[in-house]
Length: 172
Image 1 (cartoon, rainbow, N blue to C red):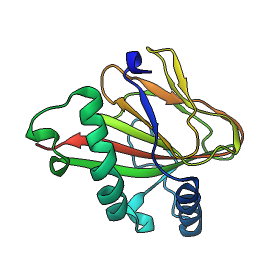
Image 2 (image 1 turned 45 degrees about the vertical axis):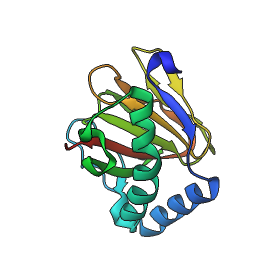
Image 3 (image 1 turned 180 degrees about the vertical axis):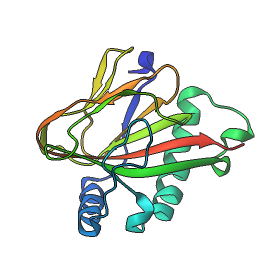
Image 4 (image 1 turned 30 degrees about the vertical axis):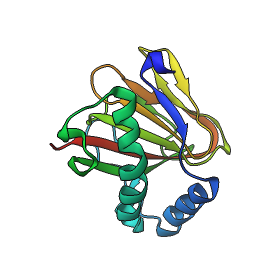
């Protein structure tokens, strides 16, 4: 998928994904109005006590360096210590929110991790690239967030879809 600037790779174990879903459902503090233009049914990672561990172990060690490599990002502004992320779990279900309209994320790039696959429909659709991504459980997808990669969450038709999303910005 390199020609589309959408890259997917395995990142989390299925056991880790199940753990995050179960932790989020046990906390049950879903919100629906955090994002002004394209709100999702979501929960910040800090609400389940996983922000620091995820940012230090996953983003700093794997995701930031992978993005730097894939897009040839250079200079101190792209060092992991100069990047920040807003990370949240999103829940798509038939009762509250089954999809999300086409939009651009407010970030330099975005990481989307598929946490489960026991649903029908769904996936992340990139309209300019004519690409639908439905990753395996634990797989991450990186894409530029602003300008070129307008995308949306296709509607699920049954079950519940969970994804973990990081809006990543360089602060350097």
